[in-house]
Length: 521
Image (cartoon, rainbow, N blue to C red; front, side, top):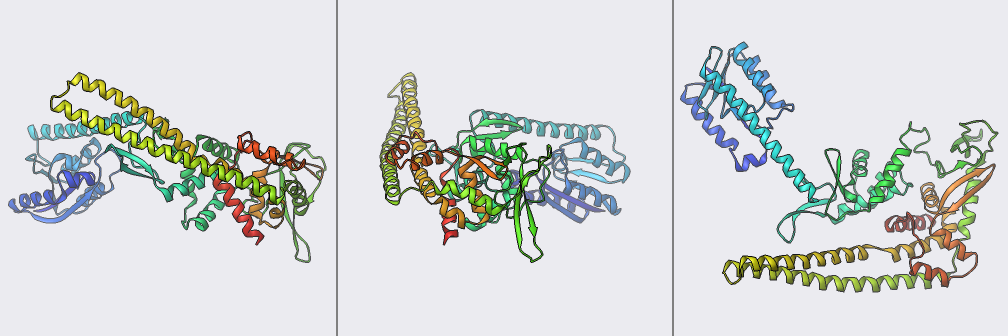
């Protein structure tokens, strides 16, 4: 009689710590050869026995049905073949319809077409118990996951940008991976700024980091709020205790942008129109669209006009060059004298260095103090074990030490936030960008023009052929002082943080300034 061996484990952990494939194979071979059977085929695989689709198991069943000379299917235990009733039915079909024998070595159970009575009862009972064991494992996994989630811990593998590692207390924890975290924060910041599409982000990632991400992977990162301090589990959001890569408001901007642009794809997407989707008509509120017109001579021109979607009102057309001139005019008025700019920037950066050195020194002192408290805890525990102090006294000291550690952790978190806050450096780059914006704007490429407009302007409207606009913060403050040539109050306003930097982030401003300078060269 020809027999088939089925050798299965659920996961790699079971292969290492449980009943390995090799151990099963040895036991099955001895059993099969002891009966005088010929081994026709061995199926070795790793696959869960849950209700989900079991491709490898289904392949075994299909081949058993095709080969009439394969008369016996031999497994180590019932739960090595199935833990659900669906597969139970498939195996019963093999023995009843196709006249196959099912052998379970460890369970000492053999059933075939003519088996009745106690063996069938044992077969059904063992399948039921195997299924209940799987249900208990699922329940334990859900309870464990919920317990971890309520404590602010993620119950699975860390997402891209993080790594699972042990912390100082020996607990499993999730830490940012420097290079990948920088990639993730750049993706989120670029998209939240409203100046970069996913395609542009893909190109910038390849240029700046040398990584080739698909649009799908970028979108997955944009939808994962883990990077902003929240973890999604079974459609519910939980706050986590790990270090976020961006602030939560970044994801609010991302979701708002996705909602706003979740429409029929435009035929203009991907074309080099720097002012597309940045201006609305002052008369009817519709979007100002762009069109490319080619003259008989072969020269091509870009024109902008209201879509007149709501109603016709003889909207004016103007060229892209007309808009460039009107955008460049206020940018040129932002210019700060070179000596005033140098003084303001150097003052801000010097202040940032002093602030950083102070917080770095204080952070090191607090870390030493926390380590001292940890040593005190261990020493007290040793005294408790040796009977030097009572358990009650140990518990009292333990609570005191934990409270002190909690205070230290709070101070460290605040210092880390202050250290990571690059307000002064961002302000310095913004001022440098503002002082050169007019000159840079005229020579910038289409993408850089678009990003400059997104960074500097808001509420852009077209009234006939005249562009109406407002400046974002802090460019409105810069323009106010530029028109009055009063630079000392501007420095004081930035130093005292009376100037709101708005949506501008350090990475996006620095990157835009670098690219605009490159275009100028």
